[in-house]
Length: 197
Ligand SMILES: [Zn+2]
Image (cartoon, rainbow, N blue to C red; front, top):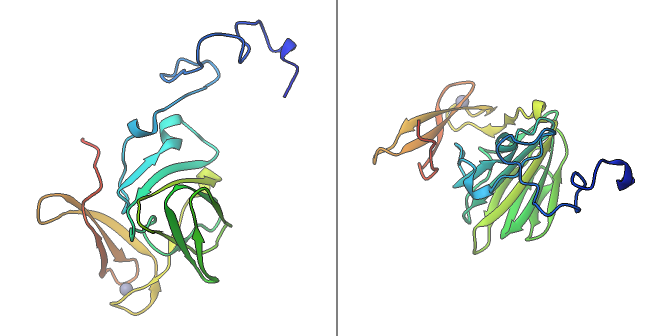
């Protein structure tokens, strides 16, 4: 921390003014921003709740997402890896099991789990209560992922493509298909709140 005596006038110094630094509407010259997590739009994902804090706050260097997943719900689309992207999962509440080629890791409440670049993983909420997770990853520009699951149709370990479809009750559902043979491999129920557009 630098000497506060050369960081401007008393009115500009953190801790010296009475007002809280909540420049939430682009009102900050330097880009300070605050957001209420509950007010960040919920975005398409197999999990019940995914709020892209990085998008809401304009973060450019790292990804940051907040998730809530019911027990048994998986957090990502599938067993996947990010070739050039590191991740950290902080379990705020509940617990997750992370499947890896080296076995399964249990990450409990108030624990953090690191996923190195190119390391396959799939996180599933476990236990009795919904898991609340903060996921941070960097660099943001290299967050592309490769899903690697065996396709029941062609029998190969393949990547997935996804699309939206309308479920029986009219709710939106997500459909995953094999990137090689095109067969539908998984359908996620439309529990996810959708942006109204
Ligand atoms: Zn296939």
